[in-house]
Length: 261
Image (cartoon, rainbow, N blue to C red; front, side):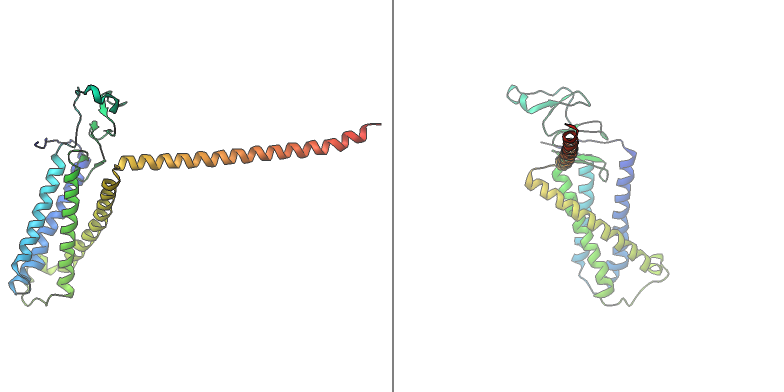
């Protein structure tokens, strides 16, 4: 079955995607210009490493585009519900449409998504039943590309032989240190974020739990703990009041006995 095209009109999502594309272009242009091509020309690295770098970069961009424009599992306005599955459907209280259980309404997209995991602004799309695997591909290729770029940035200063020919008339070589520091900062930030996201996604697949369901379970646990604390406090206040009343009654009894003839 072919993937359905899905396009979300959201300026906030466009800005986030534009930032991702900027980081991608920054690394795809400057890392080869400063590190890969000069070291290849001087015989420090084989050409296959450059091919692998561009290959991973293309895979990463394709995964981003596919995850962004693929329908995550949008429900039609008048779904056909089989008679044997009516008990597994429920009514959405926001769009007043029938939807399968474990579906959720996305306020950004304005419709319900089957087995919705979350709305990701970095791809300007929801992550649902039909594009979850594409989102995982994007996380994998992004983490792979980030590690590859950081490895070359580290080897450029601490492992490769110094470059003999450097054209200092070019802007990238005159400001090489600042450019590489910015690339390393963006790479480390991206690596930490993607690693945490990829880990949570894998845990969700293993436990068959979406991110929304995890948040809902956490909220329910917090509410249950607070209700227990409130119950304990109420019980404690009741016991204190009972003790006070008992002590007052005990103090009144001797006074009443002394008044009797």
